[in-house]
Structure formats: C-alpha cells, structure tokens
Amino acid sequence: MSQAASSATKYARHCLRLSHWGCKNRPFYHIVVAKKSFPNRHYIDPVEQVGTFDPLPNSNNEKLCALNLERLHHYIAGGITIEEPVAQLLGLAGFTPNHPSTYAQAWRNREALTDDSKRRKNVILKEIQEETN
Amino acid sequence: ENIYKMLKLPSSISQRSQNCVSLIFVRHKTWGKAVIPHKKPRWIPMARSKMFVNPPTLLIPKEELEHEESLKVEYERRMNALAKYLHDDEAKFSDRGEAGLKEAEIEEQEHRRLVQENEEENKRVAELRKIRLQKEFEQKKIQIQKEVQAQQEVEEERIRKADIYVREQAEKFANRILKPDLEGAILKALDNPIDPEFAIDLHGHI
Image (cartoon, rainbow over all chains, first blue to last red; front, side, top):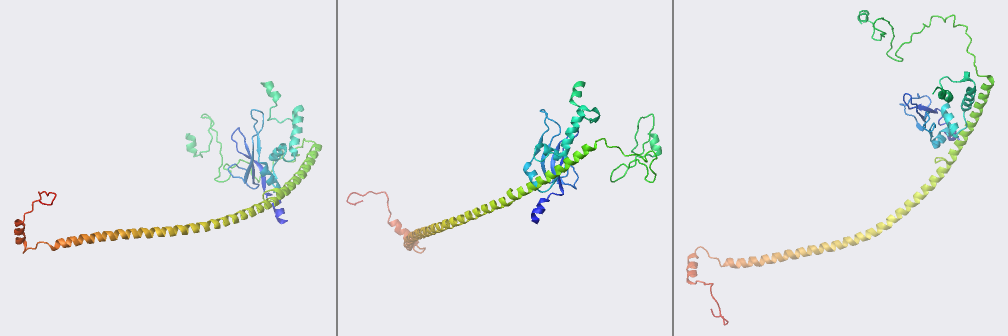
C-alpha cells in the first residue's frame, strides 16, 4: 500500500516542460522531464527528454511535435506536473484532455478576427499580409 | 580624449560624438547583476502623482473568467482520473508490475530447468570423455614402452658393434712392432716382399 502510494507521487517534484534549444530567430524546444527547482537551461541535463516541438511551421504548414508516449505514460502515472505549453500539446495530440488555455486561445482568436481592438499587436493576420503584398 | 584623462574617469564612459561630450556614469559590481540600476533611493517617499492610483481594470468579462475557472476544474478532475488510471495500469501490466513479475518468474523457472538440463548433459559427456582419455592414456603408455624398447635395442646393437671393433683392434694391436723389434721387423719385411700385381688360374696357382 505504502509502495503504491509512494510510486503514485514518485515524480511530484518533477515537471514536464519545454526547454529552449534553438538559436536567434529559430526557436526549437525539447519536451523534458526535470526537477522543478532546477533552472530551465539547456546546459543543465534533464532527467529525460521525452519529445521535441518545432514552433515554426514547415513547408507543408505543419508544426511538428514528437512525443515518447510510453515514457509519458510512466511519468504521468508517477504524478508529474505538466506545464501549460506541454499540456496544450498533449491535449492536441489526444493523449490527455485538452487544456482550458487551448479553448481560451481558440475563442479569443475567433473574437479577434471580427473585433480589431482585441487583436494581439505582434501578430500579422494572413489577409492583411496579402493586402500589403 | 584629453578631458577623460584629466578627470581620470572610468572606462565605462560612452562617447556619443567627438563634438559634444556626454558623460554617462555606470556603477559596476563584481558579483550578481554587474550593473547597479539607477533608481530612486528607498528612503525617499513615493511621488504624489503615483499615490492613490486605482489598479488597472480587467477588460476580460466576469462570465468568461468563471467559464475558464470551470474548465480548469474540469481539466484537473480529468487529469487526476487519468493519472490514477495510468498508475493502476502500470501497476498491473507494465514490466515492473504484477504481470511483469509473473512473466519474469516463469522465465526464471525455465532458465533454471535449462541450466539443470545443461549440467546433466555436461556430466554425461564428462563420463564419456573420462573413458576416452583413459584409453588414450593406456595406448600412449604402450607406445612409449615400445619406443623405449626399440631405443634400447638400437643402443645394444651399437655397443655390440663397438665391442667387436674394439676386439679386432686389440688383436691387431697385439701384433704391433715395438721399438727394440724395429730392426728385425724391417729386415723381415725386406726379406719377404709382397707384390700385389698377380693373377691366379683356375687351380689356384699364381
């Protein structure tokens, strides 16, 4: 019983997070299991790397993400904390339920399409880009 | 440049242009954040324009925030359920869970059985090997004895031949000419010359 309880919270002090591995103007992330108290730097070795995420879309307009589902199964069973970006990715992949921030982002983007004041200023909409081009 | 040398200013001075001189003093530290920020001293009170200012109003409507909260609660609930399910699944079906341990035990038993079989086979083969080696040993022993005997015979033959030779030589030696008999032997040899050039007929006459 105690063994089961301890194994259910084995990774309570760890978290699944994105570790920035890209360079200037080229972000790239490793999905990494690391201790929460450790700083999120790529030169600090994590417990394990469990996937990657490329935020820039490729030639087929896809944002590629790799996930090691077997190991994720093991860590989630051990009670690991999943940070928001990784939770979003897992939700979109279908491995976990969708994070509320996914839904929030979706309805806010939908609002911004019609209401100009609610738009984020650092993003250029495709239509406006085409107009300028 | 001369002004900087005269005033003995530190090296972290910025030079905007050669015409105008602008002095920007920057204080440095050796540890932590290197540059000490230029801020108001903490004993000076807050400016009156900044006091009694209302906090910024949240533009997101209340219903939306409540909806987000409810989504969050639902998500937490589902994630906890998932974690529990995955934990039970791992406990039952993973390589370190019950199923895995059972499989490991079965494999262990199989391994022990095979090891036992191997040991028995080894024993059987060892017995056969023992018999074979014994046979070979005896054969080798006989072979060695034969060789030794042959060698002994060769040695005896050699000794026998040597013996005969020595006896012949000894007999010859007995007929040697000594120094006082030398003159008599010479006269005898001169009196009896031997001519090797001769022939004999069928009756044996020279």
